[in-house]
Length: 250
Image 1 (spheres, rainbow, N blue to C red):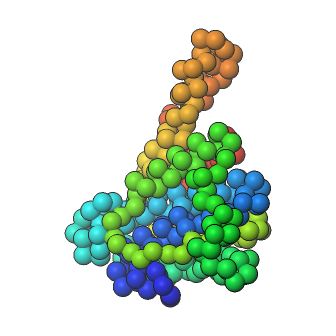
Image 2 (image 1 turned 180 degrees about the vertical axis):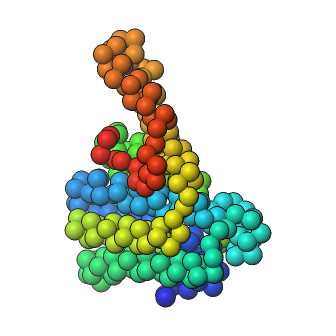
């Protein structure tokens, strides 16, 4: 482990979880590449959402968690010693996936530093991008959900890095989701807990349909009827064991 991961490890599993969640916030995109990356960036957001969903189900999330001692004092932490050991190893592996992309970014910079004016101009934080309206809503909604699931462990700052090639982001998303799959095998949250968390996410992501319905139902009854059908179904049934928010529906 290096850098921020060492800090996280020193704080134990609560610190490693926070470190892993925070890595997502340091992913930027190259200005000339980003227009091809919107879908992959949403998939990355969804991976972070999955990670924090698992963290909340296991008791790693929450404002009361400031270190491993306070984590255990909450009475919500459910992992056994063996599960905790495997989860910590998996958090380190996820961090290493981000570090690998960070090294690729350094090569693209051709010797220039993160704070070089040319690099600052070229590498853009996703929140500053010109998303299409629906993707912007999904990005912001998932980030809001994630923010509410972070714990309060203090960790070190990481160096931002940018994605310059779509294939690198695709690989990062795949690798991270593979490791989150591993976490869900280490501790599969009870189906009722998974359903509860997924339902909350779905309600948040579909808020835009409620706004749309209110705006159009009187003037466009045909589309309003279609939107209302979606709203009627949104909370009536969430598939048991639902793992991912289905972005393709949007």
